[in-house]
Image 1: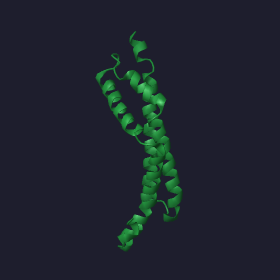
Image 2: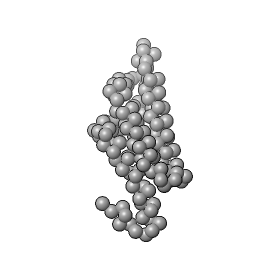
Image 3: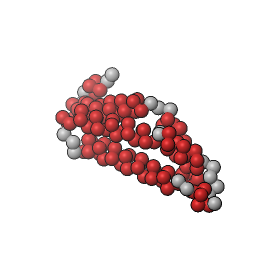
Image 4: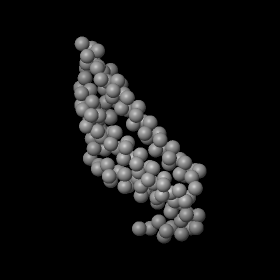
Length: 132
C-alpha cells in the first residue's frame, strides 16, 4: 500500500526538474543579454526570453501538473520534506495560474527590450529615454 500511495510522485519530481531546467535556460539568456550579447540583438533576445517565459508558465500551470499536486497534498506516504515541497509547489501553482500566459510572455518581452534602452540611457545619463 505504501508504494501505491507514492505512485506517480516521481512524475511530480520530473515536473519540478523540467521547470528548474527551463528557469536555468531563462537565466542563461538573461546573463548573456547583460554580459555578452551585442546590443543590436535585443529584439531577437526579447523574442527568445518571452517564448521561454510562456513555455515555463504553461509547464508550471498545466492541468496535469495541478492534478499531480492535488493528488499528493495530503498523501500520508510522503515524508515531511516531500509534503512541504508539494505544499509550496501548490502555492506557486495557484499564484501562477491566476496570471494569463500571454501577459507573462508580453511582460517578459517588454522587460527584455527595455534593458537595452536602460543601458543606453545610463551610459548617456539621459534617463528620459526609458520614461513612459
